[in-house]
Image (cartoon, rainbow, N blue to C red; front, side, top):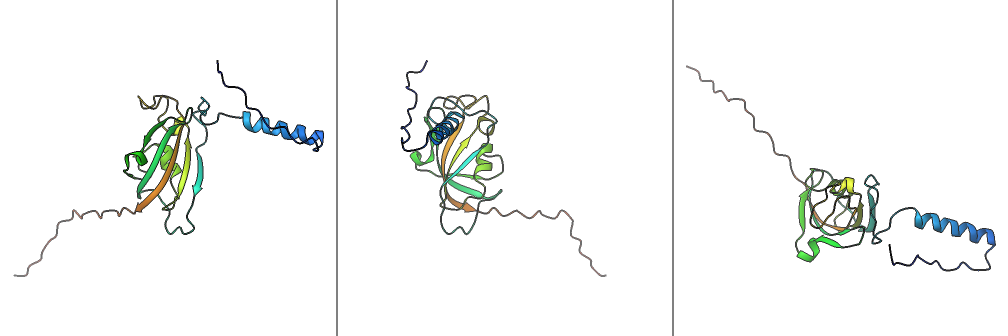
Length: 176
């Protein structure tokens, strides 16, 4: 049982025709009651779609992040259900470095950070299937948790592929 009062909407202007007021009221109800909202005690369904919100994008984007790049990120991770911060590189003052698309991070990050520009800021809302699943990552992330990350791309380093050394033996011909 929740002590929270239901959300109250401002009254629509009386000058508006009754049919228009009714239509707008219905649309607001559909939009606001359609699914869980951040910080209101619920998670999204585990199979919900990854949400990527661009909060800031620099005018000049010379290079976009792609699989195999080593990224340097700042982030703050929160539980979607109650907005509790469970981890933050910002609070530690240490950027987090990893290779994109290599499974070094949760799937929601591997998918949600592709195409980012240096200096760009995004908000990722990650359903549990693309996060830590039904098992979670105790003690801070319970099973089935939807996660929300504020992320900033600080730098990109392209990882060059190492050339394979040839195993063929060199033969030296000598003439007698």
